[in-house]
Each structure stands twice: as C-alpha cells, then as structure tokens.
Length: 284
Picture 1 (cartoon, rainbow, N blue to C red):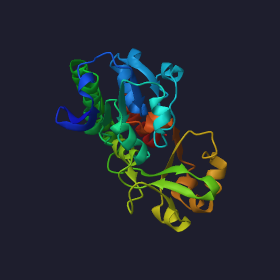
Picture 2 (cartoon, rainbow, N blue to C red; picture 1 turned 60 degrees about the vertical axis):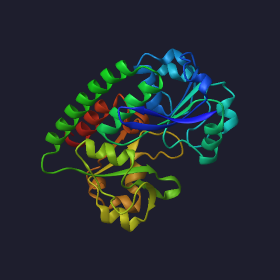
Picture 3 (spheres, helix red, strand yellow; picture 1 turned 90 degrees about the vertical axis):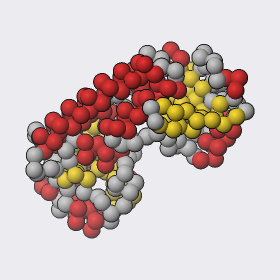
C-alpha cells in the first residue's frame, strides 16, 4: 500500500490508496458526513453509494442506505463491515484512533476539507468531484453554488443594514446548562453569512456558558436546531431559564429554529439556508 495525496483545484486532501485501486472507477463508495453525501447525490453519483453515516439524511433516498454510525463516533469494524471500495469523509470524523485504522486499511480513504465559508463550500465540492473522478461536473456545480452563495450573502447584508442582529446559537440546554457556539464553528459561519453577529467571541468551538455570560452577551435572537430529542427545549422553557430571561431575545420572544443539516451542513443547499435565516432574523 502507498500513501499519496489528492490535489483538487489547489486543495490537498489526505488519501491513502493502494496502487491496484488507483484506476478503478467502480468502487463502492461509503460517504461520511452529511454535506459530502449531499454533494455526491447532487453530482449524480448517488448510485455508487453503498452506505452512509448517521448525519447523512438528505436527500431522502440516502436514508435507505446502511448506516455505519455517527461520524464522530465511528468504529473501524462498523465502517469496514459494509465492504467499501472508497471512503469519502468530511474532515472532523472520528475518533482519531478509528481514522488511523481506516487510513492504514487497504481501502482508499479521502478526507474532504470542511471550512465554514462560501469559499470552503466551493472547495468541498471540487474535492468531492476529484475523489469521484467527476471534475467537470463538480467545477460547474461549484461555480453555480458559489454564485448563489454570493447573491444570498449580498441579500442578507442588505437586510441587516447597519444594525446586524446579535445572535446566540445554543446547541443544547440539557441539564439546565447552555451549550453555545463560539468562534470557528458552522454556527458562527452561518450567522455571519446571514448578516448576523455571533455574540460569543471569547472561545472557539462549542462550550457551556455561565448564566452571567449569557446575560452579558445580550443576544437579540436565539438560534437553535429544531431538535425533538432530549437536547431540545420548547420556547416557554427556554425563555424561563434564568440566563435567558433577562436578554433582549427573551423580551421579544425571538427564537429561530432550523433543521440542523440544512443550517450547519455547508453544502449545496447553504445559499437557501442563508436566505431563510436572514429572512427569519430581519423580516419578522
């Protein structure tokens, strides 16, 4: 086995490819990551998929595929049990020890960069297209998606004007603790693209916030995924939380809930998500 790299439009993605498989276009593809799966279907390559991870729920036809587990909690046995000839994964899949095993296996393994911006989405499309040997279609799709994203961001900026809404993204309120988004996250990226301002600037990633930190952040709007599991909270319970109750968002009862993959996936549908989020922030 040899290790090499995939270079697509200036993007380097880690690839671990046995020489005997380099010229094989008939591999059975396992997709890990909701946006990667969406891109594969959008490129017309969905018939090559033999399995997907739990986050890959769009389009609807993806749900009929075998599920190898949540992308951040994969097991090597579960992934390899479906007999993939090619694995295409969003960067960030894990745990690290599983990825190390998969990278050492006799299966091509491609990591797709995941950046939370217009440019990142365009790069992602090109990288997936290169992995599937579908560069011409991917280039056309990347150009179209890039144009739609630019138009959506311009519309969102015009809606925001010189008074952008201050937004707090809450990942969960489980156990009465608010888990919120800081900088350099998908939530942070989509808020900015939609013309808002993420009120949490003190840290990166998703971390719990104290009641004092939430009150001091003074968000105009609470943004959440429309979850129905034990991480979800209805509006009455949300605005009754002591940390939230004193905020401008609570006073105006301003909360926006959107599908998680649609909102945070950073894939082909993100231009629509930007428009929908900006409309929810500024047209109500």
